[in-house]
Length: 123
Image 1 (cartoon, rainbow, N blue to C red):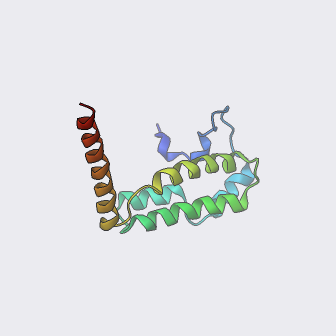
Image 2 (cartoon, one colour; image 1 turned 90 degrees about the vertical axis):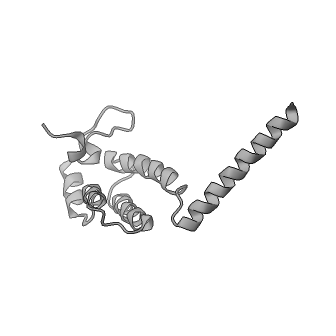
Image 3 (cartoon, rainbow, N blue to C red; image 1 turned 90 degrees about the horizontal axis):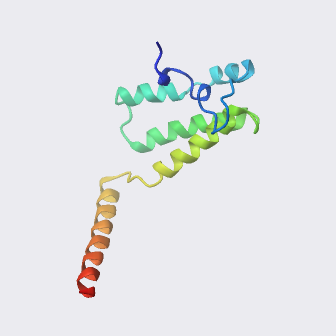
């Protein structure tokens, strides 16, 4: 039995609608893409990404390929739009360097300290 991750992502994403199978034209166009989500997953498992930015660039390349080669009403286009919006919301908030991480941690610490001070002021 195949696990779900071995199927192309558009085979089981239906954007909350009934699941629609892609056409042969969709599959042929997808096969012409040099970089796929499956290849990106393999690169993640084999730890080939040295920077998070490299990972993000590869994922965005897949999105760009689908947006440029499929119609707006294609299920693959719609599924990719949903996935790319989700990915963008998660990826944009992640620190890319140690300095960025330190700054975000310091900002959160300052917020926590301010909340603690405010809680003592109320008493």
